[in-house]
Length: 402
Length: 228
Image (cartoon, rainbow over all chains, first blue to last red; front, side, top):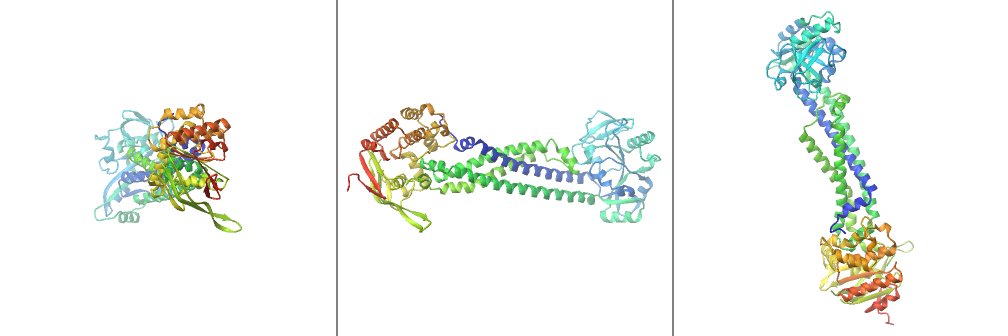
């Protein structure tokens, strides 16, 4: 015989089927709320990271790159690809009014054939003029990159000191970048000399679409920050009007497209969460009401042996709170198990920059989801608890007696 | 402790398809005193108001008029929380029918008033009660596994576990055989002799031999059996 028992816990254990259904429902609610919030937060963070990483207000690319409608895929979503324009066009662009900082980049896509260790987008930048990539490479490596040195994105299975081969050229991994949640996580960075060497090698091996290309005379894109007193829009309009065969784009326009998609996803997620909420609250309300109705006589007995109205109501609320906490914990566990290990798959499926929040924020969101599960369960049982507190034990016990 | 009912009465509203809602007088103005150390037996036909009177005496149903005093304390002048605590401490009520909580074992049902009060249960006394009522072998059984008579004895042990000063028993031997009926009446008599005021509502004629006072309830009015 025990000295002490917890009646709410014993009541829950006494009806394992009903308790399991209630816990499952609250787990579903918590999982949806946490999973949905993590995905939307991850997308928002990915987008902010991308904005920070793009680093230039204006991007100028060969006109055919925009007509192939792959520019956005390459710039924002990490697809591999490349395009080139004459380096002389760069001089024309630099000479335009309103153009401030200028730097060029060269792209090359490695393949999955025997020539290359891994299929990735290789981005060559000019360390002398670069203002977009260098600042965050410097966070990992202070010395300049030498010939054959590369910096790899966080998602690539390569580490400092490794050697990767691209088109037969052995490259030395000099640094590995932090996770950004953008296409840069699967890219390889190097200086212009090294990428020209790689492009030449790809041409020599007849594995480049541009067989008559002179790597020294081309660039893939020109990145520009407007001079003081000029807006990005003015620079874009001026270049598009006066420089042929190229297309100037405001990088924020590209990102705004992603932002629109993100808003759509956030809205759909919000609606989904709201729908699950309403459904779960209605079901919880019904189940708690039915369960308390079934046990009216038991609550009347509790009143007979000295439980106050408040104590009887607290018993119902504690049962609901326990269900909420158990379901909430289960929901958090399942939600994290789904989102954390599969964040790369989510990124791939959504085709948008995705960067999971840090551990502290995940813990905070999990705590909030748990609290929400407890509040929802308690709220759904509040009506039943109130009815139990108003119950007249004499009427219930009298039954057909008088 | 003495329990006194002073001019208590109770009316209910009854739904009637033909006549609509009408008032039904369950207990007419009644006065009654349960003295410590005595067994009072209350008999009467079904529907005569015995259970309603017992509920009013136990602080479970507020009378339409009059008052119920435990010693000098007016039960219905107390707020619910205090009245409930008083009921837990001073009253042992055996309601009609099956009243065990299904999620608890027989022993836990018996100890429930102690768990509610937060006070340390007297396990030895619980054991003694179970032995007296011949249910100690069933201590770990759930109510679903017990017979009506066994559940009845669990309810009786539960009512006695806190050694209350007032026992209100509504048909305590309803589901019991002759032998167990004698045991229960004997136990209630012993409890009275130890100082409790005991009221037994029953149809059993044998109860008379344990009674110090007897009443009969008829159409909501309390009369002594030998009254005209």
